[in-house]
Image 1 (tube, rainbow, N blue to C red):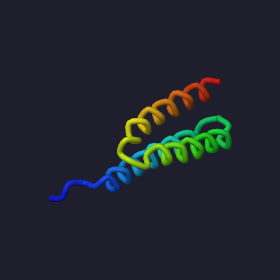
Image 2: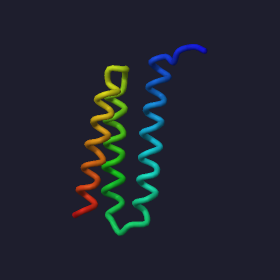
Image 3: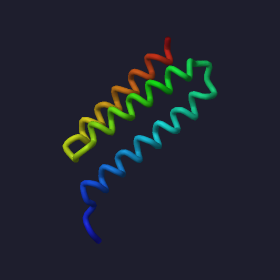
Length: 79
């Protein structure tokens, strides 16, 4: 088999982020939270992650950004 290309790896990474965000949004719909604010936050984070994962070097930064995003969402949900 052929080794995955940089483009393949980036697509897999971005697809994983999209899946996590979709599950997170689905879970939040059942909670009593300001969904409009969370949706805006998630959209901004997704855009930022896509900017950071333009090459393989950005994947580690994207991982860190995703972890920071989840920490921020935990904080928002506790408010």
